[in-house]
Each structure stands twice: as C-alpha cells, then as structure tokens.
Length: 96
Ligand SMILES: [Zn+2]
Image 1: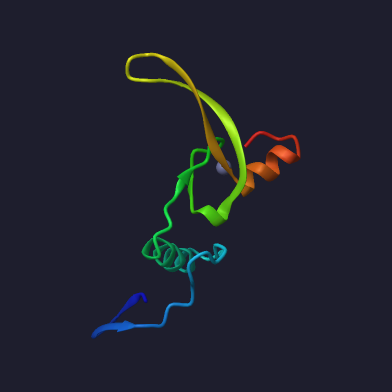
Image 2: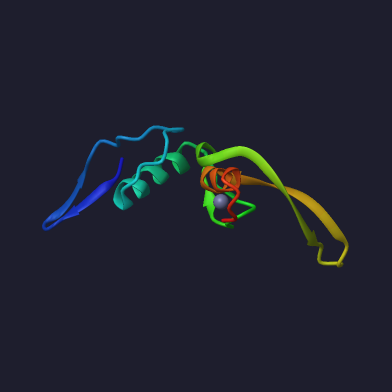
C-alpha cells in the first residue's frame, strides 16, 4: 500500500499489484509494483547480459555462462540469469 503525499498530508491508496504480477510500463506504477514484489519477499537478480537487476517474473528462465575471477584470482565460470528483453534480442541474433 503506497503512501501518496498530497498538499496537507499523506493518503494511503490500495495497492494494485500483487506478488508475481508482471512489471507495468509506467515509471510510477513500476515503483509501486516493485515495492509490492519486495515486500512479498521476491528479490532481484542481475542479468548476465545487460547487468540490470530484475525480479524473477522479468527473467527469461535462461542462463548464460560468465567467466570471472575470485579475489584470489582463481578463474571461475558461473551461470547468470538472462532477462526477457536480452533473451528476445539474443533470439533475433542481436547483442544487447
Ligand atoms: Zn538483460
């Protein structure tokens, strides 16, 4: 339930988003939606392609392998999830 600041105080309006809902397009709606996701316990993961952070319902379910190094410089390969946008771009043969 987001609080909305008005000239002489704050009103609380009923939240229109539930846990697991798809992300809305509008900027203000997105923040309200993200708050609902976070409060329900969902957490964001970093996309292995574009390095932006996404809630689980925005991820494609696919993974890419990323090479990195530990603090002791041991080379490791790990899997990172891919967001739907990058997955679609990869499907079209573009790089994000
Ligand atoms: Zn991405």
